Image 1: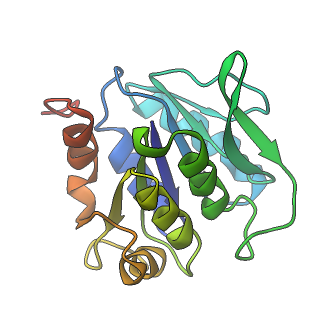
Image 2: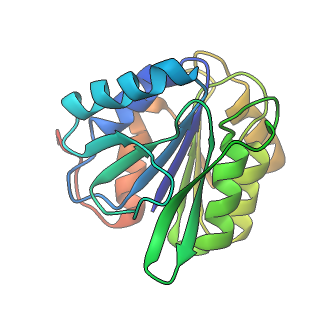
Length: 192
């Protein structure tokens, strides 16, 4: 499974990554710092541009391959394991790192729930949200990627992750999708 976090500049970065992923991709869960009135429209816009299905996550929703789940702007998004499989879990708990949704909340749940079966990606953004969670994912055996300085709009969150040693690799934005697919064992991106 793939877990992506982003903030400032993230909407375009996420679009670039997702449009290069094939429909056969495992599930993708995303936290993008964004006011709640915009996350639904963001998901619908991406759904029209991508081979994969993109939607706003719903509480208790079963997680399926070929689908991207965007955290609603009002809730933390986590992945939980139930008797019927993996599900999205939404919570209006207090903000973490001044954010709700928080990337750290998503990444921490990924580390606990899927461990080495996860791929964590931290894209452009201000602050440090997601850095500690990405480290938790790496320590749980996941492959972790941070966007590099030159391709970030704001080199905050990925920088903090790099400083913590949370990223297995630091790559330019145009290579993120390719590296995800390489790690998952896919040959080429949608366009290549």
